[in-house]
Length: 357
Image 1 (tube, rainbow, N blue to C red):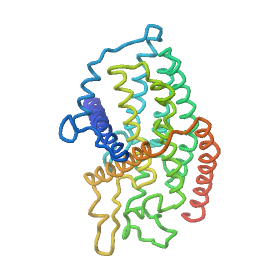
Image 2 (cartoon, one colour):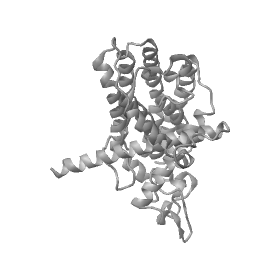
Image 3 (cartoon, helix red, strand yellow):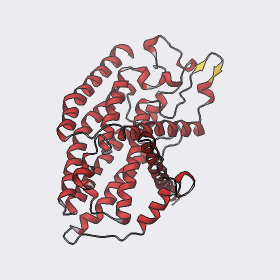
Image 4 (tube, one colour):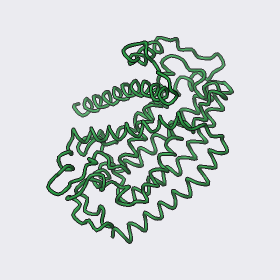
């Protein structure tokens, strides 16, 4: 019984976190966009507009749940739940610190990559079930986009997995800490515990993984339907894309899933490439910065801080880059990112064989 209670409590905590982050994310994005466009953003509701997003949520949950007369009522009703649950379940195996992970799976990388792919099914359900031409077109675009960009994203992740020799996200994080016996061998630094910090991150242990992370980051924008890959939600072309017909709490779940997905893909990149929960501060002689800034509290702090930095870059790119055309989107995926990701995987194999053996 205690096992089930603990799992329920963890699930509620994760749900509360995603809800709070969505509130924070929407407000932050409004302010970021305002800063980039030389505006003020929300200012009226609360000091500096901090309560504007909360007011919007209170408004949206009170709105009527409208189902179009010609819609497939079952698919239409289930789609928001499928979209949100697929993203929400991805947090189950994500480590926040060395000793803080909801479910430490030996195939954590595979699980996360598989479960977030289900979101495309929910988006297609929303597009088809709405019986709206704009929704259907948005759903089809999303499926084509997600299925395409999963390939370079997955191969970039494999490049990091080949260096770490594990699919367990906790093991991958531990390997980027100060206790890693193989880190920075190529620089001649054998006693890693004397250095640690950002020098132990995968992108520094094997520099080609920096390219792999850039590939993963670009592909993750497409997975999130974020600009410049927001073709499934192109307001100027599709009204609102696959969620055109949604109102009230159903729309809120779709909206919540989008911001949760931003945090999730950012967290995956942090764990695989950017040192996970490990401190970026290196040990310098007797000044043991890496040792002093590790532990459960610091692990949560560094994980959260790194992911928020990645999310800030995602927002920055949305309000900086123009939307790609469909042919440009597919060309970037198949002609640029996919070949480069295969190159990273090949280099990882050679690096593991020749440098880290």
